[in-house]
Image 1 (tube, rainbow, N blue to C red):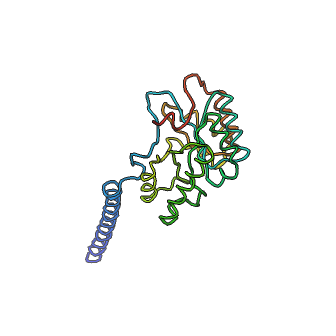
Image 2 (tube, rainbow, N blue to C red):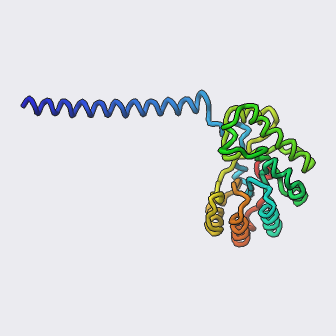
Image 3 (cartoon, rainbow, N blue to C red):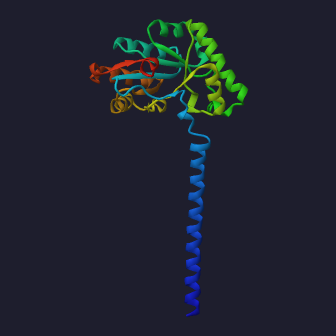
Length: 243
C-alpha cells in the first residue's frame, strides 16, 4: 500500500513539474511577444514600410529583385512591354554600375528602378555594423540616381533583413521600405507553370508581387500575362500602386 501511494506521489509530482515547466515556457513566450509588440513593435509595422496598394483599385505591382542581370532583366522588361505592363526592378548598386545602359533603359521604357542595397550582402544587411548598413543604402542611392537621372525613393531590403539601424537610415534619407504582399518563391527555381499558378492564385487588387530576375521567372511571367484575363487589372510599378 505504501509503495502504491509513493508511486502515485511521484506520478503527481512529475505531472505537476511538467505543468509548471509548460507554464514557464508559455509565460516566457508571452513575454517575448509582448516585448516585440509593445517595447519594440514589428519592424514591418513602421509607417514607412509599404506592403500593398488600395484594395479598391484593381492594380497589381510586379517587382523584380537582384538585377540588373544582363539577360533576364531585358527579357523581363520585353515581356512586360509586350503585354502593355510595367514593373519595378530593385537593383543592386554594383550590378547597376556594371550595366548602366540596361539600368537607364528600364526607366526610359517606363519601368521603375528601386534600390536593393549596394552589394546585396549575405545573409542580409542585419549582419553588418551600423556604419556599413548606412553605406550600403547611401552608395546604392547615389549610384542609381547618377545612372537614371532622378532620385530613387523605394528600398527593398535584401533577404527581407530589417533592424532598427536600417529603419533609422531610411527615415533619415526619406526613403520608403518597399515590402510585398505576395512572395511567389521563384528564387528557388520552381517550374514556370508553378510560379504562374501562384501568381494567378494570389491575384487581388493592390497586390505587390515579389519576384526575381531568373530564367524561370521570365517564362512564368509570359504564361501569366498571356492567360490571366488581364483586362480586369492594371499591371504596373510599385510606386504607381503604393501611394
